[in-house]
Length: 390
Image 1: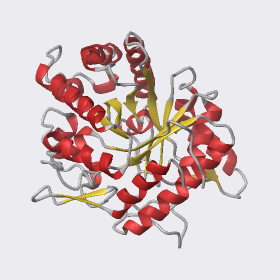
Image 2: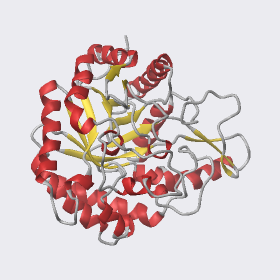
Image 3: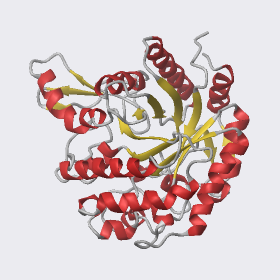
Image 4: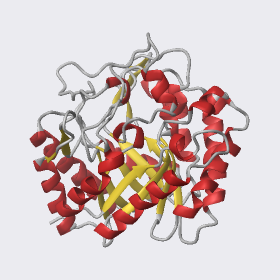
């Protein structure tokens, strides 16, 4: 048996816009309904998690998991500048209380890619006031945080957010050709993260950090590859991990790897197994991300806040997760402070520009009836959680 540390968090994760449905005040809703953008389909009702979260949480708890990561939708809480929806605050506090009632430790994310329409119209993260606007939003959430909430993620994948805000396209990046990062947006996201942490510090015992998409860039054997990797990877990955030094924790989110040659990132190697997102099947990605985060952040404690695979073959999901957890256990055995594993995703959901085709969930959802059907992978992961061991 490969035992994990006492108190290890075993859970699954979602993001508000991907599961709630009808987030009509968010910038992503606007993009989904703008002709000409490369978005497969609109989110619509998503999987109606906004109304069905008690059922979804109970499925996770009944399976044996002890944690659930979810995000709060800024566009619901602050639909207009400075206007706070008390009803939305109460909704998200009910989600926290439901977690606690079911024995699930809530891991709360404040911003998972989406922002209110008004924030986007005011310049998005390029608005000089963005850090203060995010701090004001964080302050609005203080009444519902604390009292059972230990971990708060301020910003989800700021490195991917900076690339989504970028201009010139880059080829063969981990997420199918994201733009090059906007470094000004990166600076704004860092400032926003730090201002949010300052606000959260007023809540006793609350720990805060952000989550980074560790993209596991690897050099080829060609001359110049290692130098190119350092140049290419630093503003997309390493810089964010370095900036995590001093935080209470850093979230690692990993799925695959990307080879970098002397000219830049390369396509998935010919003949390699790929997932429904076109990424290489590579279960060691999370362990590699943990080691990188631990080293570059100066030994900041780590939560694996996302790790999973888009596949219609649930046995392959179990295989991937088993191999990933075995590699993660090796990092713990080497003395790295890893505090939990939150699988992506709890539910088959809306995967941004890819629409509903890539299925990451431990739970299948009929999008016509919203009926939930737990997959064998949920029972498998729940059994690991009950044993706290592989």
